Length: 424
Ligand code: PA5
Image 1 (cartoon, rainbow, N blue to C red):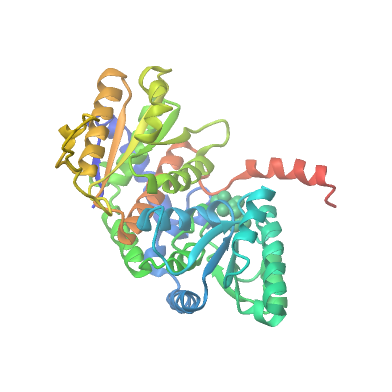
Image 2 (image 1 turned 90 degrees about the vertical axis):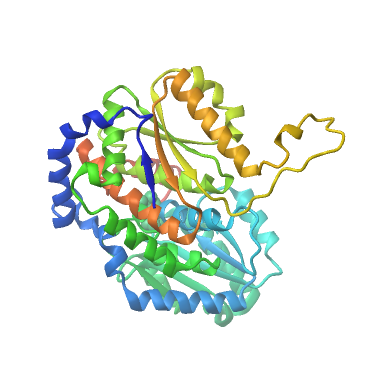
């Protein structure tokens, strides 16, 4: 399913030296004895997820798809990036869909929030507020605004059936609010942290409302979990990726550049950056995760990658089969001199750009490349890739010696912001 090609990364010779450590952490993941062991639920989630809740998600999604024109997802970080990444990956940037899906609660930008509110004011609107902690300020601000928007539009009773709160099953401000107001709730398992939660109700409801096949997505995740259960690096591509990152870091590569050649993978890159960045950037350690969307960004960042400082490597996600493709047309006059492409498909051009760039960056620029190939951009492939990345990330961060499942540094800006805003 996922094909790893490490020939341009020059790491395989060093794998053996990591096997003992990988085996140790492999057992810590399975036995749930590693750092942050209360948050290792994602490892078995594709098998032991709450089936009743999953059916409830499908039922809610069906109702919403019948009644809504607009579905607002209100959440930040792990509470929105996964669903947005999945939806865009599978459906593209200009999907034909009965329900428009918009994301709020991920910014304080007043223009963004108010412009959206104005845009949807005459539509049938449902809101899914998502927060594991239940206290995140960006989310709480947007939710209060959209909750009042619904109350003004539909009254208290009418708005109640249009709001779904996804949060902790027992505690937190959002849970209390939802209970008080009688909102439908979905819950996030205790042992799955925000950035590992796309395969829980956090991601499932928005993804299902958008019309993706969440059964296929979970099947993909299960197959990835099965395929990547060996402790042996040579048998486990997720561990190969995990170890390759550490080997490249040891060679002085401090930046990992996630590269995709499909515009619809831009949010996947954002999701990936959060997963790896928030999991490993602590205790003065970690690779800085950056992303580019080629060939677009070859015209902005290509120069730097080719000839700039040599402290980065690329992780290139290639997709074998695009959602859509067509042959480039011939033109009788050929004033633009483009007839040399006539008959080739647009995707062939894209693939050749990828190959040419790989050769330029690796052969001439000296940039190591980890190549990950996906067959397509289906819901199944998203589920598979998500589980692959969780396994790779958990292992890679354990190899760094830090807890992959906390994010203590995120609190610092909040403390300052609350002080400045006079929060008691
Ligand atoms: O990975 C994480 O835990 C975080 O990035 C959270 O997803 C993010 O901060 C949002 O938190 P919450 O869901 O509690 O609102």
